[in-house]
Structure formats: C-alpha cells, structure tokens
Image 1 (spheres, rainbow, N blue to C red):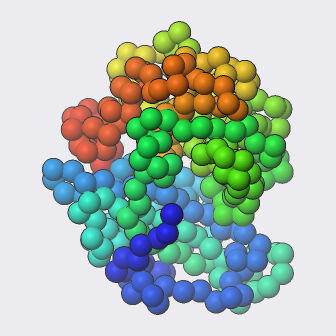
Image 2: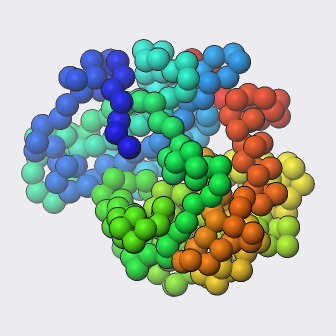
Length: 308
C-alpha cells in the first residue's frame, strides 16, 4: 500500500521535512543490506495518541544492532524521546505507524561494514490494516512457501535486519502471485517458522500454541509476546511447541500477530479451511481484547502505552 507523506522525519538528531529525508545512492546499506529497523504503532486513545510498547520495540532495535556489530550513538532513552518527537511533529490523532531505522551511510564501499558511518532515522505515516480490512475481520488465506526461513547460523534471525527481508519478500511475492494473501515459511528443520512479517498461532482443543522463536528461526515478536500475556490473563493455556504444516491444517483456529498485522485471523492454509473458515471464539476474544488494550481500555495493560 502506498506510503502517505507526513510532515517531519527525525534524522540523526534533527527533525527534517518529509521531502528532504533522503540518502545518497551510495549509502552502504542500500548495497549490502546491513541495517536494522523496527515497526511501532501509535494508537488513538481517549487520552490522545499513545505508542504501544515503545521501549520494548526500541530495545529490540538496540539488540539487533548489537547482534550485527553496528555501533549506535544513541541510547535507549534518547531513541524513546526521538520517537515521541516524531509523534508530536506529525498528525497522530487517528493513529500512526513509526519506522525507526539504523543504516550504514555514505562514505565507504565494500562488503566490510566496519568503516561506514552509522545513521539513524525515524519516520511515521498512517497505516491501516496491513493484510486488509476484510482480512482483519474475516481472515486471510495462506500458502506454505517454497522459500525456507533463514538458518539462524547463516543469518541471525533474532535481529530485525534489513537485508534479511529479501527472504520474506520472495515468499510474499510467491504467495500473492499464486492468489494467496500471505506466506508461511518453514524453518531449516521443516517445522513452521513464521509469516513474512508475522508470528504464527494456532488454537487446538482450547490451547493456544505458537512456535518457539529460537527453535523455529522466527523473530521474537513484541505483538506475539503481548498476545501471549493477554491470553494468559484471560485464562487460556499457552504453549510454545514445534509445529508442522499438518498442525496448521488440523487446527481449530489460527491467527497471525505482528505490529503491522496486529491480530489477523486465518481462514485457510494451502486451500485447507481452518476450523469453520471464520474467526473462531478464541481468536475473536484475543483480537478484541488486544484492540481494547491498545486503546487504553484495559487498566492492567496501560503500562504498555507511552503518551507523548
């Protein structure tokens, strides 16, 4: 979906006009993919815009940089304040999506990233349902991709790195070109890993199940963790398990989670209808509660919201 321009972008400590937020064609990360990024949602609440789990997202950004040996010149508190500056500088009254990115800039060429300068930027724009309003309401169709998720010893899957998403992009293109909404990738061992930008959940006999990120090669999700916490708060049992594609086919319910995807039901996988083919009761309750949490309507989880 096209990005709608907003007013200001934060770049290396300064708020600049949207149209001036540019980089040189010889920016190192453009050529070699050595960068890290985050996706963070700011939601509209009765008390004004509120950023959902801001510190956790930015801590993951810091951790990703550590994994990739990218020296950050900003600490966590500075990144938090910079993100809030972006929210204040743009119209976030109806909600807004934040994209912090750490990239290696202009001045060095060659595979060795060490001498390249490190740049940090935070942009924001309005972003509605990632997999579509209909998908959010009625569920999406998935294809098991022919593209495998990275082996964690080939590309560190615990880091949200820019270049690693070539893998996800290939899987997404394959799924969309074949008539599906999204792809599911298998890990190196053949078990279920994740979607192209989402974690995977199934419900079987009332138990909520999701692959263990470190075992499946999936990125540990902030929304994944939020939904697990909400599910346990509501009294559901949640298990981390190794899942095969047949576990998806035979699930009673299935849904995806992610900052962009939020909580999206799944109606079919590889042309197998999941459950009744409509969002099930557990999925519906978790989705409804998640959106109440993001609006600040659940007191137990208001600490997840940061107000500018």
